[in-house]
Image 1 (cartoon, one colour):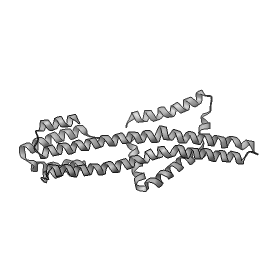
Image 2 (cartoon, rainbow, N blue to C red; image 1 turned 120 degrees about the vertical axis):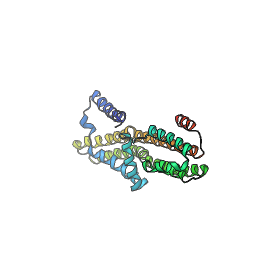
Image 3 (cartoon, helix red, strand yellow; image 1 turned 30 degrees about the vertical axis):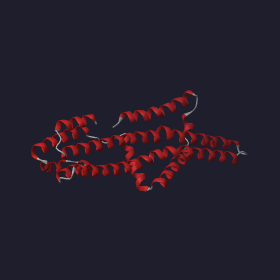
Image 4 (cartoon, rainbow, N blue to C red; image 1 turned 90 degrees about the vertical axis):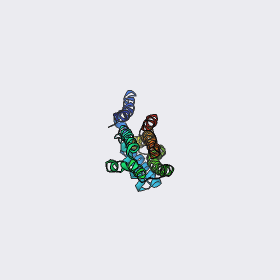
Amino acid sequence: MDWGSVAGLLLALAGIVVGQALEGGELSSLIQPAAFIIVVVGTLGAVLLQSGLSLFLRGVRMGLWVFLPPSDRLRDIKRDVVSWSVTARREGLLSLERQLDSVRDPYVAKGLRLIVDGVDPFKLREILDVEISDFESRQRLAVKVWESAGGYSPTVGILGAVLGLIHVMENLSDPSRLGSGIAVAFVATIYGVGLANLVFLPIGAKLRSMVNREIVKREMIADVFCAIATGENPRIIEERMTTY
């Protein structure tokens, strides 16, 4: 669990609630189911229309990374790669074949299999670079789901505000119904802007940084695998990974 992300979300919400209380307002005035439905459902619909169902679901699942980040296992990968480089230098590249069954990461397993198959180092790097490009494209599209939600949410909030004002104008003859319409109008704007700047955009930015980190990790793996294939000194390989 990433407690920093949990604390950040709670702190953002607490700032709004405490600020509302200090201004003398009631917490209940911020709870408007109609405004919530307009903003949340409208934003989800717009994002789904843009992304499609499969990409939308992938983006939602990726959002869990903010609070439950996947393990990057950098230390384990560094230890394994250094061990593989020593083994390959002493016993040859074919000796790495027995390590394939113990590798869980499909990308690492593919690179190791290419080394065992004796693929030319330049061709190996080309293949792994294509894998990196494909991974980057897919992940960035999933991150775009959250960034798009952050873009649509304020606009949908404005739509909610306009709908609330229309409701007010329709009931000018009934003063008892004016308050609820005005509340929906203003609270819808708060929901739209608040969700965009406190939830959607921060999640998108954090996911983007996590994807960048994973890309750098894969570039490192491709680099050191090429070094292993060319028979480079294990100490140099270890130093190269430390630099990454």
